[in-house]
Length: 458
Ligand code: SF4
Ligand code: SF4
Image 1 (tube, helix red, strand yellow):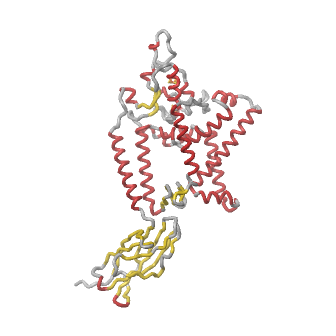
Image 2 (tube, rainbow, N blue to C red):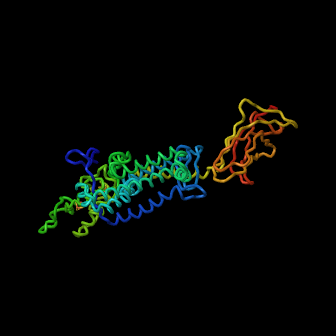
Image 3 (cartoon, protein in one colour):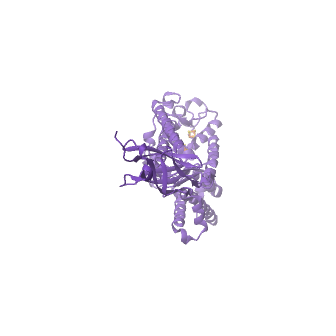
């Protein structure tokens, strides 16, 4: 892989502004459709409701996360960590097997840049040649109109993206409140929207491909995650070299590459894939489409640039499923299994019961012994819960000092209660007791605690 210092630059060492040519081939159309699905999901995500909850909410401040309508609380944090770990292992495995294809096909940066902002730029300023001419030309009336309209649309779009992004963090209801209520009530929210808007606008109007080639840490990891078995966008130098124009007298004198340079013209990061695998390649596959169009015209085999591993090109081998890939697949399967198990085991109502500190037991009338307990009850659902505690053992009586009552949706409460046991039923220093958390005869959770009391050693 080439070094980061090999960023496309001018002869003065300045950044080279990209004017990628768009060649619509088969893969471009697939990306296009994928981006439509992606954009619909992105903009609908915080507003679509599943069981009264958003599809996705990542409220980091309150440590509340919603995934497909399922709310995860700080108490479920280990599930969140497990899900993140599974996600990370999937990314590592996916990168090992398919390189940086995530970047070119599903990364929000590429989708918004290439499938939204770039299209608007082309619509207003024209194709690559016209855009370059407009930028290099003098400040005419046409240039002012085109540039102003483009940047105005960019700001509006950035504003929309910033609002949606914020809705994923604070929830759509809070966002609507910020938008409809006086600014003085939501100064932080209001400022955040404009800070995000400015950030998105700068990213899509100025920073652009530098996010992928310089800033993104995932891009920098490619060197360690990929190996000679990794499938990635690559130039088949064995078929392509020696490159050059077709020799009409001896068409076999040269390789398939006619050195037209189209694969470089279409590259949004400005690299020449014929120089070998490079960190700057986001696997957007634009060069595959462009080269295939050339190959079709000159009646040569397609996929001179295609999805190849180094091993496939060098040793003419088929793609291989290496032992490293098998090991990762096994780890992913185990992680998914554990994650699904814990999600399935997750209760709608979470309860923590602790015997009150500093008190052993109390003697009650009719030869009963009591212990006093505190319990924290969390309702993780979006509906009211009228719950009560019921002991598994019919000999155990429960007397509330502070009863649970009706528990509001997504809220918690603390209750205080006595557990009472006939002294004749106490046979050890600690007696295990099971308590069911019940709502209308439905057991929502079962918890274990211990009961202390005097007992006869004989
Ligand atoms: S598009 Fe294909 S033929 Fe043209 S320069 Fe690139 S690799 Fe060679
Ligand atoms: S080399 Fe090809 S796949 Fe890689 S970024 Fe450039 S156009 Fe996209």
